[in-house]
Length: 431
Image 1 (cartoon, rainbow, N blue to C red):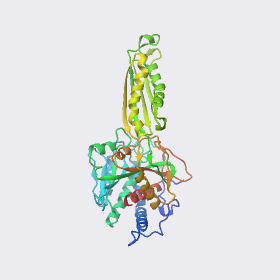
Image 2 (tube, helix red, strand yellow):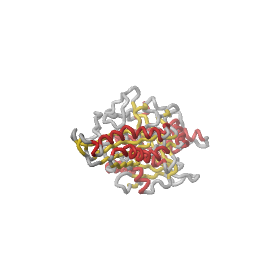
Image 3 (cartoon, rainbow, N blue to C red):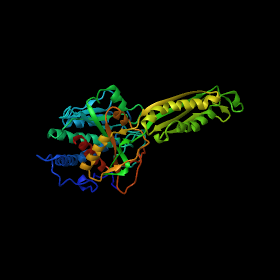
């Protein structure tokens, strides 16, 4: 296993990434489209390798200084400083953290808009237990979802694309999105879309997300939904309360909560198409403090997830109806709050196929793998409600090494994935 405390392994020595030594560097004068793509892929690889040590150091610095959602001030400043050093002009978002940055022309030769590349900046409220020498210096805060890698990859892709633009090889413009607050509801994607005009002029967008189930050197793709919708559900039940010896004289809050816990998921299973993958799971219940008193208030909290966007649009109302009908016989009052989190990320066919081609060009012919649909939520879905695009899974597992899990404090990623991600997104933008 790669020791993340040691200097990074050069991509030139990485046998999972196909060497481009025999490819012509740059566009081939008078060459056909295949030659041009090969030349761009070679140049992308060359520029990525030149940046590799710097990008790994940048990622380690961000990892050591994680910041929670909407507090990503230091991380935003570090990204902005590096982009300005490359001659670019990043624009800080008015929401307090995060930025966008344009590279190249507003429109391509055929009127195409910009290509968007998106990263997320925030960390999680978790204690890091990885043991790496660049571990979090902030108690109770850690980059346990790989956002430090996402940020570094989009930064690296931007630096590569800026060089290509200087060389006259960037056919259409690119907009980099460094988004805050992916880990909370409502998230930073909604801030960008609803409170700024930064998505204007973008007609295609892509993102990568770390996946410790894939070996480094591979990228997982999927056409259609790749994540789940995710909403929060809070049920509050009240009554006058009373003595447990006389439940018939009051509304039994605890009993009613129990009925909601068991019956509401069953109702969903009969009201929505089972192929939509609807799942309601309760994560917290609070009611009472003593065994011989019926409490006056009880609260139930859970998450509602749907694999299909059409089911997601109906599921919240069905939950409300089901809860109200389940508790109706028990003389209690009930309120149900369903807060929309994110819809499923639905990858567009053409953009996904183009990303797959970019991976094959820049990483290798066998680097693309089919990924399963996840029950997790991702606010990149909001961009795809406005602009066609795709999200893919970036393999971060060391071949033959341990399979870690996201949102766990011991997560360790193979840093060679940074170069793979940079090549992938840069090649997607220039194809």
